[in-house]
Length: 259
Image (tube, rainbow, N blue to C red; front, side, top):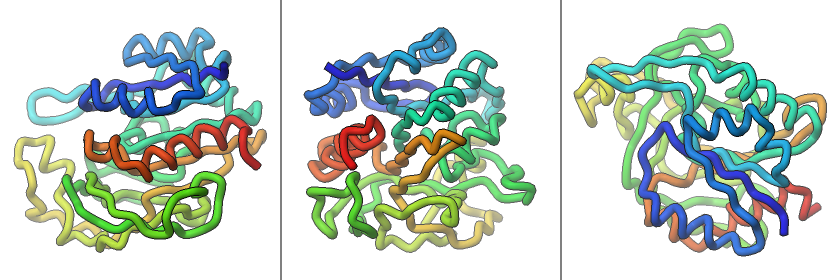
């Protein structure tokens, strides 16, 4: 049986419903590791031994005193991830993985986007912190025929958290778009949220953003496949049959199981 390594930690989630989502991937032998143990395990070769890797983690943050500090990953973890992609072996990333490792810009180039908890610099430009909105009911629309979207309706309903974040659209193949409007008026400031002012956009003038909620790209000299699925905030999302199908397709695709 093929091996799937799942990484989590750094961001809260409901463990039992997420475990049920993983259990739906019946054709895989799953090892689920949480940070900080996950970081050490990957540095010691855990990703090399896996046929597929699922990043559902948000590494490198410490939240305290109404603010957040960050750090880069260990050199061993960074090297293991880069070497995996360089060898042509891919990965799937979900939801808050887009925010992980704020002090490792290469990670976000590999992912194809970035969620920022605080204002910062992305590709040399100063940008505002990203936006979030929980429990959004929206229609997901398939953008292209692709192995990750096979067997999924052209449109399907989702209730999930959405991000107003940086997406490098020129570098990715769009898979799914949302019909929600990705504008300041529909999101809340992440920086205000971690400072104790939840659900606020006061003084936060974020420009409109991409409505992409899933994409595929290749990474590194090995052209390793990377699939990002923005789905994944709540049990309701974990139980969505179309989200489950896309996750199963994505893991199969990056492991080389589909053309």
